[in-house]
Image (tube, rainbow, N blue to C red):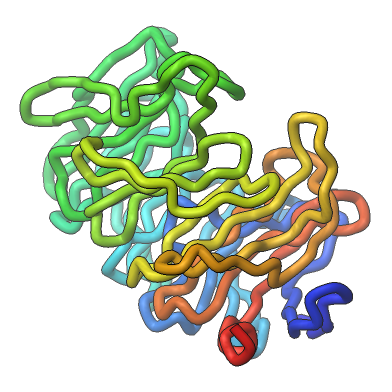
Length: 339
């Protein structure tokens, strides 16, 4: 771990990893911190000639690292409320990881021969959900309830991704039609009990909707309307408001108390900018570039900023001189002093 002053914003930043391999925080649609905010988690690509790839726990204060799962596991994501993570081994064996001692309990199995197209997400009842590519090449939404076998609740010819069960309503699963770009209608909501699918945000011509995330309490979702607008809609998709707008924003995230937004500023669609992390006060729309970064080599190296559970720290990827993600934090207490 090293500390440095951001050359543009002047704020103190901590960097915890160093390449040449990619070291990337968990995706912004998952919690990234333990329930007490003492640790965060990141995925490490295997170093050439070493067997060190996997998901690691990092002590925020000291930088001490501990491997939690090796490279045979994927889909690692944290529960919203419990100090538990969910992970997949051999593409179909589902485990719950007790993050207090890193012990594992097998929860069940997904259909063999397929693969995850999203990380796991969990409702407050313990039900977990994911999008999955079945061995017959059909895409599916799958749920797994504690003590029960997995259940395929929806099948589609479309490539399904970014599946996120509502944190406080196990009956609702948000998902997208993944095109790796724009889509005619990207965002969808699935009702598990009724087996009913409806659009979430109904797109109009020339609208590009992307990078959606539930609020921690499941009452609303934030998403991007390119270029650079952050919108927030209610759980049912009946009401939407533009929450913020700035140059080249891409991945939005809400603090758990709903008062703050963060997003990465990225060069895309032919526009080059100083890349970095932006903090936004939701009530006023006031925004500030708080950390600058290198330029991303790929989507996996995007900054993907997200808050800790207390909302006073942001974890983000900072692409190094080769554009490869390395994990950093910025303490927001220093930012808010002169807000």
